[in-house]
Every structure is written in structure tokens, then in C-alpha cells.
Picture 1: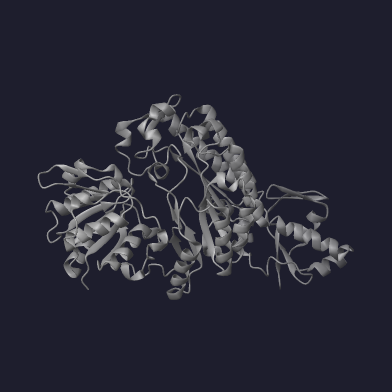
Picture 2: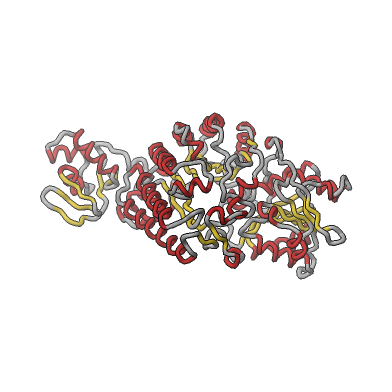
Length: 567
């Protein structure tokens, strides 16, 4: 089948196995929208190692005449290399008009066009300018220099840069992504899909590209989002999880509650991003979200220092972050994820000590749930910090910033108090002490920490990877998770308790199990939990009331020290 444009999203690293991370939703929206105009498109996501072969095949076999590349901060260098390879005649038979869009396109201009041979840059949201571009090129409608957001070189070599187009006002008018537009046969046919329920961001964090570049916040109606989910379920009955990627999901509490009602009715698990400032005034939302199937949420932590948070213009407090973590844990949320930035605004030994101390508190209060990561500060294009780093106590190091491979994975700035080597040492210390904290808290984990929400019945959801890693290193916890079926975790008088853990010492009235000290009846029952006696037998042997035996066995089970076997 012949088609017109191949949208391409490429990475140097291996492609994630789950298609909701692999397929760029924006490119699929463009393909579906262009289809209404009679422009046939396909979308491909993969690695640069396979890109040339795929592009050559699509041009040769399907007559592709346009290539649309997605450009982000981590792939712009190899994207430029590949475009140069195509346009400079190094790839025989690969003749096509090349367009570049995506978040990095706004940072590109005449130099990029001249160096690579790229034909057009589309800055900002692409729906309106791309539709106009194809109408102009294919149908002769309008003029190139009248198309907003378009950048290109004129025939005389001069550079044309149009003002940014107004973004799409009504997101409900954008068609849903379609499987037939993907080169991947499994697109949206797995257990999970990704979605955007809105665009734009009302916050203006000093370090964030989204906040610096976004226009007016626009939200899809809940009915429109549910329509997309129902459409997917029509051809994919195996769908079990929806991941919302937009920054604005928790912006309107009533809208969140409407989502909760609709998602719960569909019996779907879901994930989202949330802003602390929106949740702190509506803590009851967290309970409703978890009750409706929320299994993972990401919040922006960034720092444990209020001085740094204020410099970032986060509009949150460090105390508010801790309250959110505590409430999420109490509500039974399986996973709450957040990052700490190393080497940001006004960073010093003092601010990093504050961050490290808070991170440890979050691990303790969010036991079994809190996923804490660290990243280096990255100066994204167009942000207030990147434009005026000195105002934020930072100095961008050009020779480092110009040679990054993956953003946030190496230091590219210095602060007034900390040079590059100090930042590296701080990140190493931060990561090491957090790993030690996870390992220590693993020994204190309870049943409710290990088997949070759907993790009891859906272990393949692959959540809590940091906790699972440390749990795997404790034989008692590893075995407890193995025996996590509802039957093995439910007490009955006829069930046989089976002890877990290693004995490291005992006395007449106590026993030490994996650094936990048991005494009295707990110690006796743990030693007797060998699968030979059920609760009824133990009640008779110890001449104790069955309710007392039952409550003690349940406490040991809650502490992950035994499970119940039917035989």
C-alpha cells in the first residue's frame, strides 16, 4: 500500500517492551488527523540501529515521500546525523522531504537546516501547521510563508521563521490514535496503553521546559477520554491498565473524581502524574483515586530544601510533600515515585543534606511504596534557569553541556558552593545512603507493605522495583511474596501456619528472626509453625483460647513471618 509520510521516533537505547512507552502519542494524533485530509501516514518507533533499513524499505516499497522525525533533547544529535546521511546523498534511493518536530524543534533554526539538509522545522504543537503545510505542498493552497510555527530556508538560502501557531483549543476534536497507522502490529494490543488527557501546564517551574513552553491549559472531556478507552477495548479485550502522561491530570478535583467513577466502572488499573499543590488541599482525592484503581503516581519532589523549592517556583512546601506521601501510604497506593535534583538552584552542602534527610524520611513513611530517584540538573532550552543561570546561583559548563549523551545523567553545571566533582560525590553518597535505607527498611516491612492493593493478585504489574529488589535479598520476604495467594494469606482455624525466616538466637522466652525479636506467645507460635499443627491443634496443645491463637498468628502473618497452608 502506498502512503505519504512516515513519522519516526528513534532512540539510541533499546526500545521499551511496552508499547505505551514506545509509540509517541503526538505523532499518532498527527497521523489520525492528517487521515481526515486524505494524507496517508504511518508511525514507527525504534532504535537508530534499525532506522536506515526501515526508512529505505518504506520509501522503496510504499512510496513514502515525507519523513517526519520526532526530536527531543536525548535524540537530537543522532536525528541530525541520520537526516544528514539521508539528505547528503549517502543513502541511495532514500529521497524524501524531511520534517522535524517535537519538543526540541523550538530550539532549532537556520544552522540546523543548513547543516543537515532538513527541509522544514515545525515548532510547538504540530496539528495546525502540519495540516496547512500538506495543503500547501500537495494541493497548492496558501503560501509557505503564511504558515505559523514553520521554519525553513528560502530558495536564496535565507532563513524564514514564522510565529508560533495558536495551539488546538478543543482537544476533543483531535481523533484517537489508530492501530492501522502504526508499523507495529502490537500497537495498543497489550495490557497497557498510554494516554494524554490534557495539554499545557499552568505552573511555571524555573527548570521545566513544559512550564516554559506551554500555552493555555486545555483538557479533554472525561467522556472523550473514556470514548478512546472504550474504542481500544473494542479491539483489545486484554487491556487492563491506562497510564496518563499529562502534567495537568490533577488540576481540577471534580474532573479527577469523574475520572475515578468512570475508570472504576471499567475495572481498570491506572497511573498518573500529580502536582503536590493540587493534592495538598484535597487529600480526599487520594483515597478516591486509589479506590478506583490507581496503582502508581508520580509527583515532583525535586528538593527537600524550601530555599531550593522556592527558587524553582514549585509552589509547594517540603512539609506538603511529606504529607502527600503519608496519605498515599495510608490509602494503600502501591507506588509513588519522585525525583531529587542534584545540583540545582542555590544547591549547597546544606540544601543537599536537607534533601537526603527528607528522602530517607519518605522511604520510611512510604515503606513498600515510595520510589525515590536522583538525577542531575539539566538546563532545558528556553527555561528561566537556562536563560539566566546566574540568577539561580548556577554556572552552565558549555563543554560538558554540549557533549551529553543522556540528559540528567551527568553534571553539566556548577553552583556557587559546589563544583562538578562535589556534585558527583554528592550523587554517589545520595544513592548509596538511599540504597542502605531501602535495605534497612525492608526488614521492617509488613504484609500491607509487600502486598499493596492489586499487587496481591497482579504481580506482573511490575511496580515497586526498588522495593522488590531489596525484598529479593531477604529470603523470608522473597518466600512471603512467593506465597502471596489469597488462600495462603488468609487465616482459618484449619490452615497450617508455616514459619518463614532464619533463627539467629533464642532464649526461654524469645527468639531472634532476621533481626526481629519475638517474645512470649509470638515466639512460641513461630517455633511451632512447622506445618504439623493447625490453629485448633495449637490451641489444644498450649491450652489457650482459639481467638488468642488466631490473633497472634495473624500478627505474625502481618509481620511476614508465616503464611497459611491448606495441607
